[in-house]
Length: 229
Image (tube, rainbow, N blue to C red):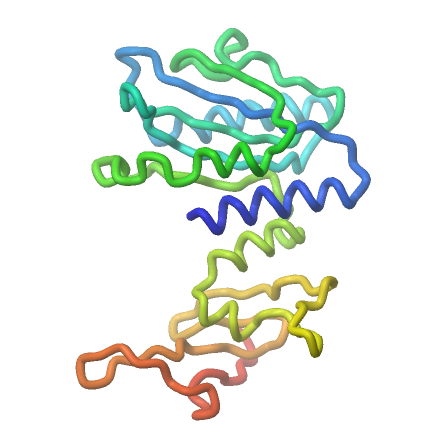
């Protein structure tokens, strides 16, 4: 989780900054009033209303990250939303506008958005054990399908061995190629399909005599060609 959230925050922020777009990152907290039942669709409903409001203003593909948390003092469930808004745009106050009818909300501008998200990663992780299915501890949205930030988020969540095999080319000093972007990788029934290169990879980890062992790359059990997936 931590790798995905931080990668998303870093890449979204860097992508917007390098593209010359003017924006401000808003950090929004959504709480539940006493007696309000927590439902899996609460957050998605709020984000949908935000997207509709932005679309009416002529904006789409506005990136955001959400993080669910239990309060440290009272253990109350609530959400944090980090959203990169176009310069000059300020969302309506969620509780008074009807975008969030479950309780109180708070919004503040995040001068260091990555630091804001890092502060809340991993808090109260053990509390998630008793939460009903249908809830997500974090999510990323507002990114086009093959945008660079989205590719980086998906890459950060891949198994370590897969990132090792498909990682960037490096120079003689071991520095990665600064222009490299992650490949498009999809899970298949027996491995992972690297779409850009038209080959697939199987995990190098195998069970042998009751133990999990890693197969050397040169044994030819890792990579195989595919025509489609």
